[in-house]
Image (cartoon, rainbow, N blue to C red; front, side):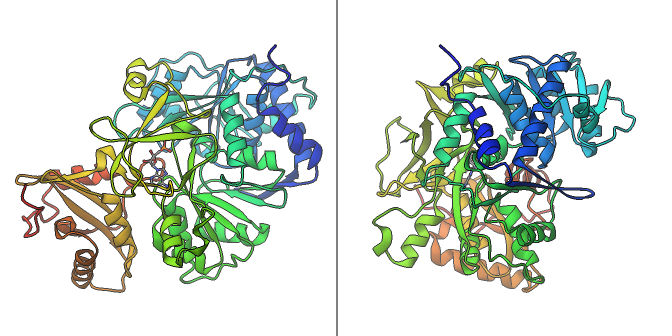
Length: 550
Ligand code: AMP
């Protein structure tokens, strides 16, 4: 019989409401901080569920959000899922035609949108014929005139309803969430999360080898709530009864610093770019990080220099790897028992890797011949994963499903090594691997080394076409003003020559103002590769360096 004992999200809400009624939820908005308790949260969640039901939302309907990180978005996290509908978070930073495709493909019924994103939604909808949407709700206390119709403001939408709601029985196989992968090529692909997937992800990340959150923690998810449920943190923080702090739209380093100080944040999560911003800000303005115990860094590789910088402030970095297809956490880099006797340098090298599979997951690493590679930290192959929170299909997309999944395994497209202790290290995306003269170069290792150099703020390395060697690496560097570019180039060449085979050293170091980023904050290498190939803005003179003769 479904329902009573199924693995659904609702017990997490029940627990926070009953065990931690006075614990706070804090949210930064355009007019300052909103602050209330889990008890008030829970009654607003029920009000919202009543409102959605009055709009006609029933089990299986999709409710879309285009919202930043704030308390109203968090209310949707539990209201939509607990009433049996599906929370479909949309990344507003995607190109408009991708947003059009996503709304159309998902057939959303209601759309919740932040005031600053009303125009984005309006534009996206003019490009589709979609006719499934029956209500727009703007995340504010008043709705200004808009082409979206019918539209209501969030507070009026809630006010008209009671905070009593009889939650229906739910099955764990019912879809609870949805997020589209922001593919750098092709149209985004939909991933659905069932209750059971989100429940098991929450429980696994709550384990000591995941990203455990306790009732004395203060959690700051800087990672967007539109991107794979902010790595599941709003669910795991509720399960753990922690205080939650939502940083609002596009928080600047100064605002993050001030939230960390004023709210006593103990654990924060975000992509490396966010922490680079804070690090840079702290070169001229002091921020008290003394309450901060852990920072979760993922989405892209955490540079070792960043791990060291946090260490020097007494903050432990948990380097994590994951994907939209796996809700998203796959590995976390904890120090394994037995490493106590290793040198500090060895321990740090382990922590800088993407880490150990969290309990509940299995993985294998498959080479070009379809064989599993040995766990020697050297040989690499494609990472395949499977587990209770890993999807086995894309939404309504048979061809992409056939390409990406095999016998229940998700083929991640990430190229990795595994060392003898089981630590995974991402060496590249399959499509970013640089093949030079038939030999392989890791763009990620080069990037890490360049970013660890004084005077470099950010750097990326891409492979560009080369007549002789098929591909050669080119480094794109964002430098600070401390060194001349010629000097920095000479220093980088010397340092990389020491650390890597000579033919790994990039043919050119191009200085740019900022590394272009994708909608999820990853380096947009394709943009740089195309710019480099299509313009003579960069010097493409052939290099003296070359890969080994075959
Ligand atoms: P997304 O589905 O948008 O979350 O992107 C998932 C991809 O981001 C992975 O397949 C990796 O290529 C990359 N990624 C995520 N976390 C890390 C990490 N810690 N280090 C390097 N790459 C990462």
